[in-house]
Length: 222
Length: 270
Image (cartoon, rainbow over all chains, first blue to last red; front, side, top):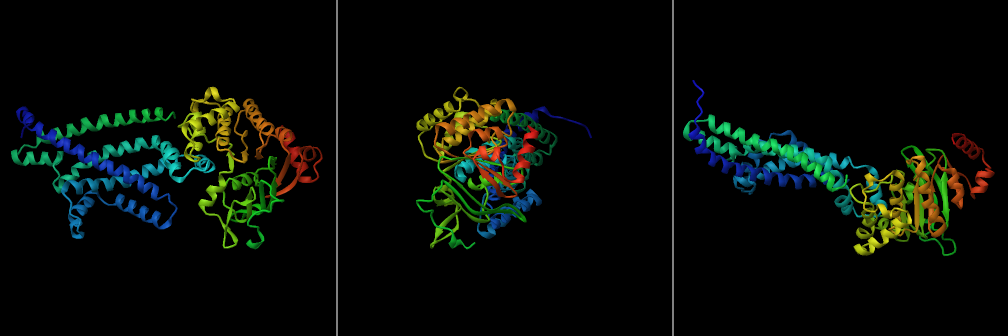
């Protein structure tokens, strides 16, 4: 057995992997967008003070966080059709990953909202502000900066979890690398490239998130 | 006391700006306010003093509807605040009623509670624009006038983090006034301030007392200040008014032992 890297093969498969990277980014981006919005809804739902809803959302979040992502992906894709929900692998994948991460993001939001001092709520009440304005204009802008670091972690997390989507045939990076491997019987180059691509995206993202946090803080005058 | 004993509205000839009628507040077993009766006339400045835990801040917080009520009724401008009429009797107020009634009351807090992500001017404009529905231009004009009144106009574009405690509190006063309340509540507004900036805040309140016909209810530990500007002092002890009267009388010739003990303890601490 010998270490044997083939550059010509590397250049040959690179464009295909690049396209797959685009797919990966779309899947991660769309899933993250779903998670951002749904996570906020879950976080706010837990603050309504209406016990049944709070409890239901709490259980949902715990359920999602305590079961594997792969299982959730399989569930949406294979069990969904039995209930008449027929989705493409792409849709299933993005919804499953979005749902999964919404549970984590809701916890990030929750911590951010809890960190806003009680006096801010009281003064909103004293100024007679509506609940909607209280959240939209006062609480959430203050809850955001301390949440960004956590949100950024999960952005990288969702990106690194997209390979899970290969199990239902979404043509993202891992799926493509597997396909290349089984066509050519060469695994070293595709897998190495996949690793490098993940690294090349994850590392700067973490740095950009930190820059973004600083920018938001300055923008809000905090 | 049966709810039917409380009038749906106070009669024309007996209508103080604020009336606490038999008001009780409990936290679990702990009675914070015990069947409190307290009137504040229109334009009157009433200061509440007393040891900590005597329920004085609770009085203000209940009036601002930051606390629920366990018994009795609070009236503002003759109308029930904490309750509303339903089928001829008073029932606990819903959020809609509270929102309508709350607009008559403004409050300043010990820790200012300015919105940290907004400038001084934006802090003042927020309520008028979002709650009262004023145009940006009207709200800006009103806010700038008030920031001038409190001497903060030259700092109007600063965020709170760039302002001293005294400056922040003055902006907070302007912000509360921008809502044009009939009753202003000051909850230990100088307690979190460095000694050298207390004066700039008390001077603003002094100015309000002298130049505006606001009804004010204040909790403070600044006895000298309270004596100067109040029409009446209420000494709270154990959730009740132990003694009340004009400042000269209450500070000069207190009738009750507890008042005397409190005042001499405060004097010693000074």
